[in-house]
Length: 291
Length: 121
Image 1 (cartoon, helix red, strand yellow):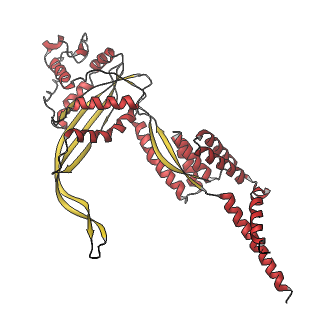
Image 2 (image 1 turned 180 degrees about the horizontal axis):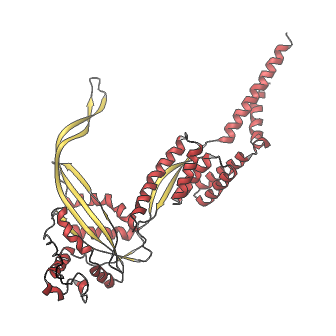
Image 3 (image 1 turned 90 degrees about the vertical axis):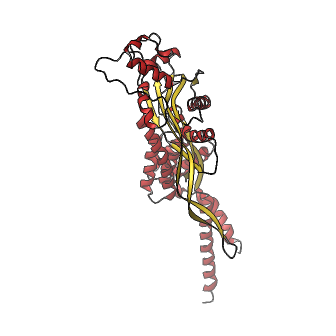
């Protein structure tokens, strides 16, 4: 019995050593099994622009608040974005007042006698397109265009301007067949009252801080931006693609935020979507690699 | 004799990874995966893809290798291949939370890209 005790102790030591060896080997051989890694996923543009080297941000049928020149500001903003974030060359030209162009075209369609008169620069020499075509007998007289655009329905009659391929083709020829970007932009102020949930900081009798959601009645004012971007092939005048957006911002009624800064705040949210139509966007993220 | 346990552990640690016992398909595939991770971390994604494709050829049941392939394809903008790789990884290891997380993040991007493609004229 006395001889077996040291032998048992020895065998236990060997077993312990073996287990230790396996454990150490596992740790040394495996190391960490996951690696977080940053990735950038490229998303292809919505439009195939291989046929275009240049882009003309022509102008927009714009309306809503008079505090911002929405047509000019949109043209300026989109041009600057495209200059830095796309491979297309941006054409520098005066922004078109498409409200006037559309109204001239409308007059031309409604008054057959006025058909021979040129309508805007683009209608020069073009007698076949709707821009200068007299209304045929039995053809429905187009709805009158509202002089001022106050709300969304005021924009509807202007849609025929974008369908006027002759006009856009003519404009495309003037600028050597670029991609043309146009559309409508409605920037309106609005107010909304109601209950709003907000976090309020509270301290209990022991001085402990906690944040509680509290519903309060608030009067808020802000702006709504509704742009529709239309992409036109300058070689044919045909619409390639269009997309509409709606963004709004609300502030406490006591807060006075200039309309222009709200306009830029809302456009900031939309610009990535606009750019994704024209250029490859990279979406950053992280993923986990596994061994 | 007190030093015998740590010494045996050290010797074991040095010898075990080189034993022929582990030189099966999985360990060969694992070597490819490990190398792929090293090069991906240095930004060499195409080399990583090559390594991980080799890994899944060697061991078609290697969920982690499919996951890594999914990440690499995603980084390269090959979204359809990425989807298939992630789905294969999940099929092999449906309860792996990291694969599931990668796949969910991928799907958000893939859905956006698909929506954009549907809108294409």
